Image 1 (tube, rainbow, N blue to C red):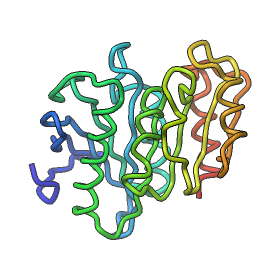
Image 2 (image 1 turned 90 degrees about the vertical axis):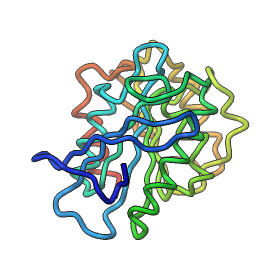
Image 3 (image 1 turned 120 degrees about the vertical axis):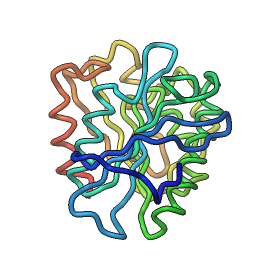
Length: 216
């Protein structure tokens, strides 16, 4: 389906398929109100597909709701092999290439819009891999798995960026994230939530409030 022909429901949301390198990518696009030609577009990447991660994840959802309030067009999508997306899990490499393909299509659709990228957990790794090639204007990484994947080979993030990390993360080494952040030549704004677990149980509103206060 061409993006110009999307049919939006009463919630200003449309479900469509975009073209990835392994085939169709199931995508949900939501428009902010008001919508302008320069409304930014944010693409949000979900957690690990082999452990139940999908675009309906609650952290992805709160990011979508928050960026909508910040006036952005939100784009959520299922990685290859998840939901109705074609292909198979590819350890972050193919997923990052799919993210690049999505952004290319979105830029043709909204040529005046800034592109932001956001990702949670495995999605943060995919976002970090893709951000330089897609020339994102702003980046958000939530609970980036810095010890699980080789972040050293990823291009440094040179644009304004943010990291949200829970201090009680039972999946990601929170201290390793803090150290990694401090070692970056262009360090991000770190939003540290000491009491938060990996999935931010009971802390989703805190994520929203922190972004509303700091993003723009």
